[in-house]
Image (cartoon, rainbow, N blue to C red; front, side, top):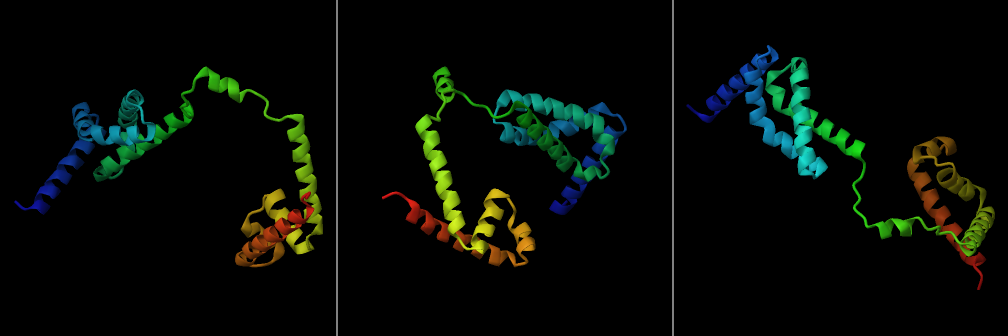
Length: 191
């Protein structure tokens, strides 16, 4: 028997196991899951990075797959279908738990301190005033381009529509306008 024939036999066996599991045969489903449990665990652990959570999610994947196996149309796609369930469930778990941050209490105390001093606020207002003055000194096209991108948050495509210019032209205008604004701000800086 050659390699192709062996693969064909394995595919037929897999399809039979899946069809039996879809028919309610728990032993067939257990065999399927035993074949794929390492793949499922690896996919989940890769996303979560935590052994205990990965094992827990693997159990949830098993339950979900048992419930939904009737929805699988092509029995030969069982492996990919199971990995997709595992991936989605791992992502859901990661999103629910949020980022894991290990920190000492002293680190949290340092983050609760107000960083803005009266002097810092005054300097920030002064920079904002200089920026506004620098923008006023720019030609209309440069000012409008910068305001659309930075203040109104428009994308390059939206700006392209508004200014009726190709995206490449908008990119060039932004580049030139930034340089001109930088020159204006240099001229405004106290000596």
